[in-house]
Image (cartoon, rainbow, N blue to C red; front, side, top):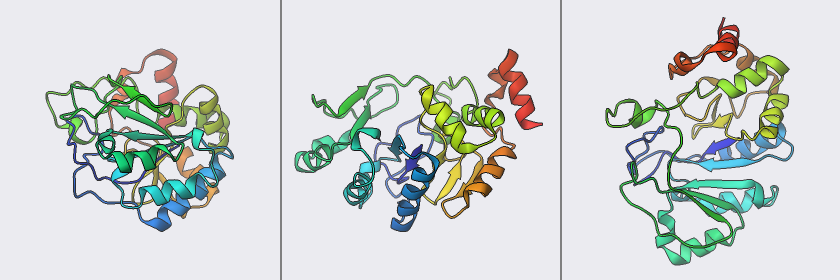
Length: 242
């Protein structure tokens, strides 16, 4: 699963699917608590991606991560960051000592500032983004090439079509190496894909049965990437959306 802690970020990357900015909204404490509880229900041993915006910009980031690692193995937590926190050495030491993992992206095509690079067992660097989604700033930026190959929600919804149960679908995806969906937005809404604009299937107050039914009945192609599907994948997409 992916939990989006904040829409706040000072980087203003040209491809940002969240259209994040310095005055973005932060996730409230109660939504965070409910997000942790929901992730535990959907996956008994959840593999969590913590994202934003820039998640370390949340004013309670350390508190949130400290509460998370009390109930979750920190090795199963990945923070998706722009890495600028590394410029603040006292702050970065506190974060790195938490034991969670940091995936820092520094693709020079999109990122106006490149973070410091350090060698640390819990830090990995991604210097090239493999897929850009047609959301946020990327959608309206003619200089950004959209290379996403399928709808953001395709994996989860196709698994749901086969299993009929969101928990089984997430477990199935996890076994195949897919960890990003579903996602919980800053406002507590749960969406079927990685992008905050993806189809809503509930919120952190929804019952599991309601989330299950909403996902089964979801009809969404906001990204218009179904045009890239062919063969059995297109057939499956048409069955999902009929």
